[in-house]
Length: 504
Image 1 (tube, rainbow, N blue to C red):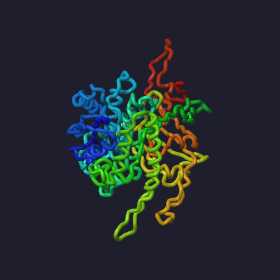
Image 2 (tube, rainbow, N blue to C red; image 1 turned 60 degrees about the vertical axis):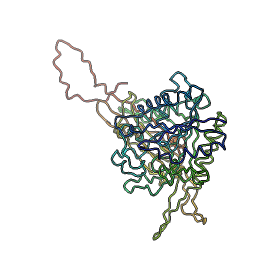
Image 3 (spheres, helix red, strand yellow; image 1 turned 90 degrees about the vertical axis):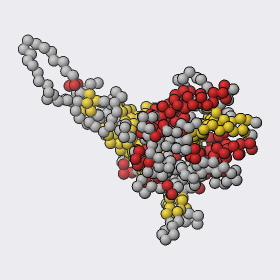
Image 4 (cartoon, rainbow, N blue to C red; image 1 turned 180 degrees about the vertical axis):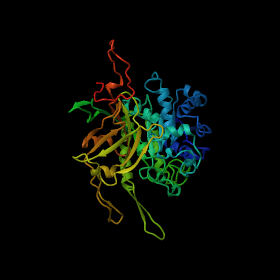
């Protein structure tokens, strides 16, 4: 019988093991039928540390490394490896640990973890994180209303520098870390909202394209990176211009297993992707989640993994087709319709070619042959959020179906309840950064709307990082050398002007 050591790592702000629901016992109950003997080890990363402001994700990674050495060293010395099942913030925590201790630059030591199964992971953060400690502590869907610690909260805010670096490293990796000599990563998440957890003061708890806490696009490991670089300034009719923004680099992450599980939300006993799992093997509402986890546990080769990636993609497509229209009935008023479209997330970072962050800028999206913002389709825009610590980073949330077009939606009687959406045929970007004048300034630039940029920037249920590099324009009058002669007198330059000439 095949032995399988399973380590559960819960999410952030958890105070007891009830967050696991019946999943550990359910796995034990069904393991023998799959030819496995499961030993569950619960490593309690969050007994207290996630509530303290000074603790950061890196600190939890260090603590996890020590916990693995203390609790599992005997089993590991026998040649065993463990499977890690995480929930929510547990996902990026273990990814950070894997990256720090067993990444490409760490000497090639084999990771003691063989499989990483992430349930509703906030791999690219959560839109809720920016609300702040006090407000998050009052939101029921955020792990029972526990007030979080600021250190981990900073990581979770959309567009955080730490998340950007971890995800960029993953996107740039060549896929060689996936396999029997590396690890097999998986993401299972939901896209349904448990209305019992909806907070009327914050619409993010009912945000379509999410599970009430984490967006499907933010959970998915399959990401992209685009680097856009502004051309060098050129002089035309006495003025300097740098109109063109050009794609210098485009990278797609290695294919990674991603599965949307039907009618699951982030937390709660009724619909939570982890906590709603019941111990009894006959419980039907838990069957899809448990079956997907066992699909992950059974993977042993890269060929099997690639096949599962394709099957999960097909199953996700099927789930999203079935869940596209949700109708909520009411006793004394008409039914409410929710359209569970596919969504995409794009995180923009604006810096100049000297590495300085640009905080004051307008980012304008365009479409059509005339590069007109008014040609973007109706309903394409879902949300925009600027990172509070790194204001050069801003996250856009797009309705992918509205942006690229989709067929009409019909109810169970065949009646059209939403007309066909034609979408946009192209996407462009304009940047106007400030200061626009002075001794150091920026020039406006844009990349023309095209089908290619639309296809590269938006992918369903996924996130794209777009790194924009502007040219830092420096006036020659920042530093002048005046030739001294016998007749030279003191020169007062406190009112010097930038002038037209710039440093080439």
